[in-house]
Amino acid sequence: MGIVTPFPGSPRQVGFDRLELNRILDIYGRMVAAGHWRDYAIDLGSDAAVFSAFRRAAERPECRVEKRPGLRNRQGMWSLIGESGIVLKRGHELASVLAPLERRFLKIVEG
Image (cartoon, rainbow, N blue to C red; front, top):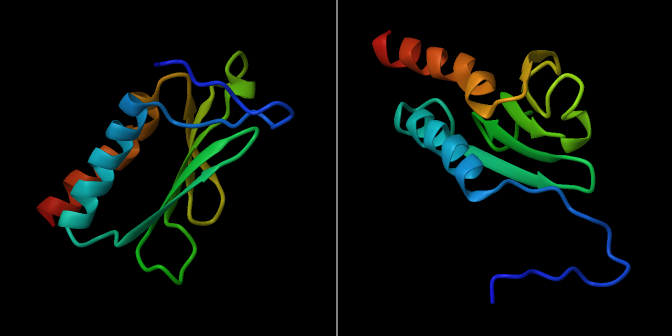
């Protein structure tokens, strides 16, 4: 029952597992509750899975969390990318890559 069999000839797809997505959506939910973010998008490709958070749906994403398993043995498969496309944080652990968003959330709530 728990085995997923891909279609023959279909390309492999990178995705988020449940714990990873829960961690990302937790931060997203808190930012929505604070009135900072309003929309998100998930892009699952053959080489990367991307979670994008938006202030408004018509804008570029304010930040993106990317999972690239191909970089696992080099810089780390996780990266946090800012609105201008600059890599803000890269690493092997999701929690350390999401740390700048946690700090930013605390600033939004306080100020």
